[in-house]
Length: 126
Image (cartoon, rainbow, N blue to C red; front, side, top):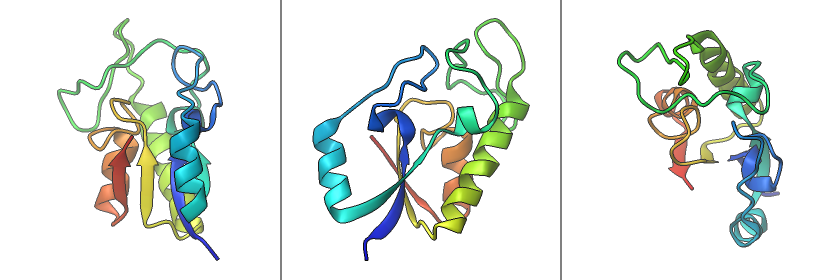
C-alpha cells in the first residue's frame, strides 16, 4: 500500500487555477505517483471560488486576510478552502503535501500551506 500525499489538483492537468488553466507536469506526476497515492485538492475551489476568478496575489498584511486585485476581501473563501484541505489530509492520513509554489492558497506561505504545516503536514512547493 502506497503512502497517501496531497497534490495540487492543477498539477494533474485539471484547469482549476485562477486563470482557468492547469500546470500539468506529467513527468513530476509520474515520479510522485510511482511512490505515492496522490490525493488531489484545490483549496480555492474547495473554498467556493469560481474558475476562472480574479487573482488574489500572495501578499498579505495580516495572516487572516487576503484581497483580490480588485480589492475584494476573499478571506472567508481562502480560510474555508484551507480548512477543507486540512480535513481531506486528515481523512486520508496524509503527512505530506506537494502543492503549487506561489499560490496564495497552496504555497508554504499560503492559507492552506500554513494551516497544513501548523498541523504537522510537510508542504513541498512544486
